[in-house]
Length: 581
Image (cartoon, rainbow, N blue to C red; front, side, top):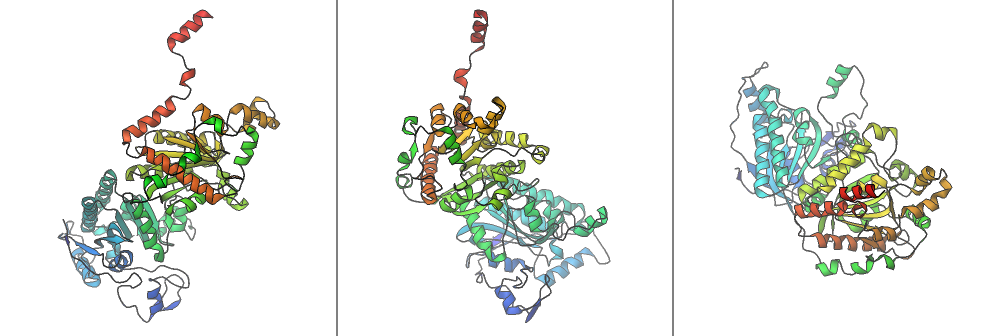
């Protein structure tokens, strides 16, 4: 275990050392007045380039004043291979220590960020390029063990050229060692966060830097396994200017979000608050008061509307979206992006926030209101990467032990060539199986269109609700009419036959309750709609609170097992019917 000492941190806006009178920006080559550079946290006020920070300065910027508790480890340096490249490795280590004042390329500390406890490991690129050697790997592992012992989230701040060549295969083994440490934190249900700074490459990028629950990057920070020059020499091509940058990786699903340095504390605070137990909030009776008046359980209380009119109202572009509800309902919502495989589908969004003091993982389809956004989000029709992103966020919720809330509003999964090439059917199927076994409460609400398997892939829940003017169906009315009547004009007839209204679905038991919409619909009064939605979700989560994982997914599986069972006969019945015929 480490020895610790308390140290008063400087104000977040103050860097560790006085800057020179003038600083040359590495990004735009502008000369910046030193004090201005310092006030801007080491970032260029002209081009936004984020300059390098020392590990000590970084920790002082991140942690609350007065909370920084350095972690010191007694680990003897070693030079097992006796490596020499013109100068003995031991001499290089001694020179790095003298130059930086650090024992190794990583420092550890415990403290708080916006009042939430955290353990932090911070790399310093000045120490042999932040390379990962045996001692650095051991320090990172021990810092993780401190987080485990204290039941605190772990924050890893990376800046590295990769594994340390001078230590040969032993440095390579640190990738596995640190990855195994993160696996132990996964098993313990502790949140892990990676803050990627420029540069992060090689063995660090291919281990703990990209294995955390949430990956944050500074603007234009570079992250990759092989360096740009090596790749260009290998493939004999010129790579695009933004190759391996945070922006490049965000678009491809490998980074959750990009945060400028001045936003780090606020963004980390949001995440860490969701990793803590539920805060004491209003009495439960106050949180869910009136939910019984909002959620209808008796089909006879609902209007007997024309089904085709319901479909038209459900598709109104002004209806609130998942992100609208997140902004109105959740405190400290932080959207998370990427499936960590191939991309970030904009038709599904999700993230962490707190509903009436309770941390939740909100996931939902996203359409938009304006033509440009509707097109960018594919009109709410997800690609496989959208469903894989949802699955990733559900697994994170399961790890942290927080409920999953899903909002369903999609015409269906995208029926295109790209979707099929990327495994659309498999992605949907995997979500169905995953949601059936989630050990946390799951509440789903159909807020607009509930289109076929693309909707169900987010709706395998303990409680399923829907707005009165929403619909849920195996196929769109237009698709049904085209197939059965070869006439899209028969969509109204198909809508009636499909029994897709909230009233029909409540009677069938497909949904547990129907939310009454404000006068004029949810699009006419989005704030009131969000209030009602929040009450309904909180009421469902209160009903599920206290149930263990086994009970939650057993009840969920039993719910779906009963659908259609009343129409299924036993083998004996089938035999009797055959004999009678």
